[in-house]
Length: 235
Image 1: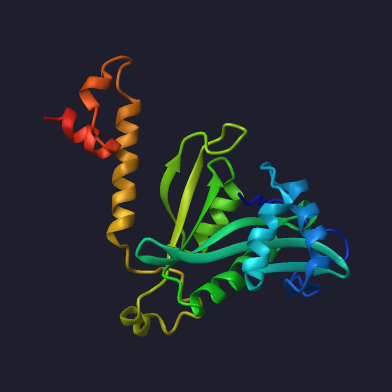
Image 2: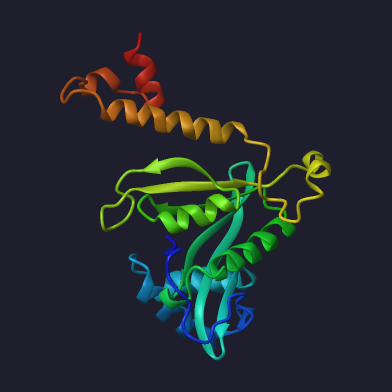
């Protein structure tokens, strides 16, 4: 969902270390309008005010804003909650306006949310990003996210998405990572769910490559997943 660019130059007056950028967590409803305006202007997906209020009202501590002076130049909106057997964080929206991209603002916004999620006991964090969004993919890759699944025509504009996933280290892994201040980078455990998602995606790719009309509904009726269908066809 995020819109990133590593090639944009900072506007005149912004120092190379971005020391003039300040960050704050969501405070009250007076900040909702600027957040909505910023996201609606920069992201390709439309959101209603109810969507914003769902995220920001329930998880205000997972919404951060970046300011240059009094101007909001970036924001991130997230949530967290139980998902199956894991406690999962989710990055819903991330925006930095074009003149301010490539200066580490997005990384700082994501890092702040990841720290809150980790401190709150999240096991993992997920998000979706357009497969064509090289800036966002590079940003999240540098923070330790891996591509767990490709989602066909996920966005309204018809573009595919990658589901990205970050797994926080388990307590027993922490000792070996104490020298790394960003403990989520290089997380070492990848549970069965991630393996299953990767296998599912390989199965979907296999089915897409089959000749048209080579598989009838009768061949796969009653099978619940692409992986089951591939196994059935291989018998």
